[in-house]
Length: 102
Image (tube, rainbow, N blue to C red; front, side, top):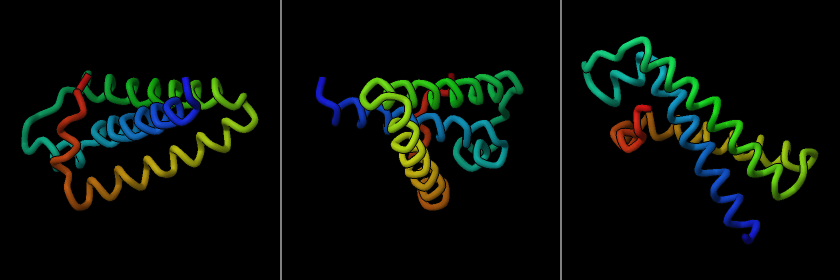
């Protein structure tokens, strides 16, 4: 598989993971889903999904480059994911409704 495809997958998983971590917070949940109440179990699953997504994202980058270079690439992907989710939550929070609430 070409490296660019694996990198794109790692970036997509990092963005999804940051979205799940954002949805685990009450303020972003209400901003995105309205006044619908969220259970504590849902917040825990969202946090676990976010952490698992970050681990999968790192594993994908390590698969391409090895652990030394992968850590640098992964940090850049996570930084890009954080910025993109922050901007999305600021300007178009409804776009995050596509994330499944696992």
